[in-house]
Image 1 (cartoon, one colour):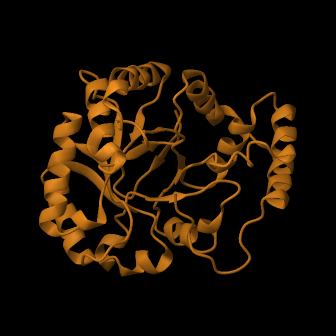
Image 2 (cartoon, one colour):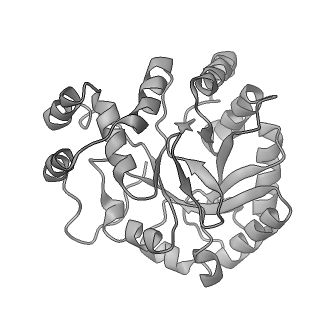
Length: 277
């Protein structure tokens, strides 16, 4: 699996599995555990979750699924902005570690900007890193002004900015991705296949998929992975789709493909805030 390098020097796979909506219904717990285990068998090593997903339920699913298999995995979790005080971050991290039954979170993110002083947030994150409870820390859904509000000494240490990013939603390219790229900070794309279906139903995407004997989803993911230091975390409850998504890392789009996609799905031409889902 291809990887990107974080400012710390640690590496992260370029394709993972999102877990939003997991852990919401107790009667589905066993099925969801089996899904995660089967995804690991296919080669998934990056799992993205959050304390918000199922109010900790998704982390519990992951904890059961990775029991005895923690080595070699890259776990990402996120904490609520209302838990972003120095004490709140530490306590939220401890809860997530207990739910996932592990000693370390590889990348721990502030889920979106809130009202807590970021100096407190990042002081707590540095402490957790020094204690070995997290390996790296970062943010999610941060616009440029939000990123600039982060204490300067921590800006270049961010493990990623996780954002809503796909061919149909390129808002991050206006200024955020450039800021991150200058500092060697990866962009992690959630909802990389969009949500309304219009992207995967595009005749343009379908044409490129046919050219490469691929699927529309693979083209959309391959386009994202062509962007510098970009990671995609599609969510799927179907093993065949998870396998398909993994295979997208092997799809090479040529310059003509990229030009056609740019024309059909152009980047923003004026200042625009990030989308959010």
